[in-house]
Image: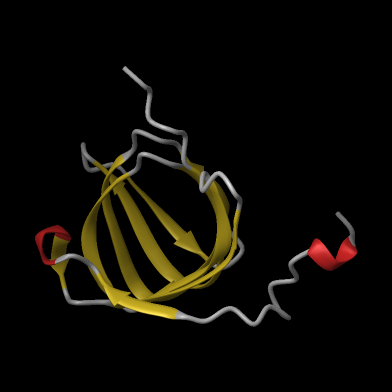
Length: 123
């Protein structure tokens, strides 16, 4: 392993994936989302890249742990009881696995994400 394995996001030639929120999760709007997944580890449990979404609101339910840094825009993250946090450029935060609620994009939002998805327990 050497410095050639380092991934510089601003130099990565990652192909963008564009998609929409699943219809059953949509609460408001039909936001187009774009994902540049710059890194996935061999176990497919750790991911990192850049995500962007147009305005809209949808239900979220996290099985993964996610660190985020908002680069641009304004979003509101609400929990199942209606508590909310406004997220704007410069905000850094972690959403723990088990969180459920709503993600609302008020102004087109762009973020860096780092995700750890634990493997499901074997029974």
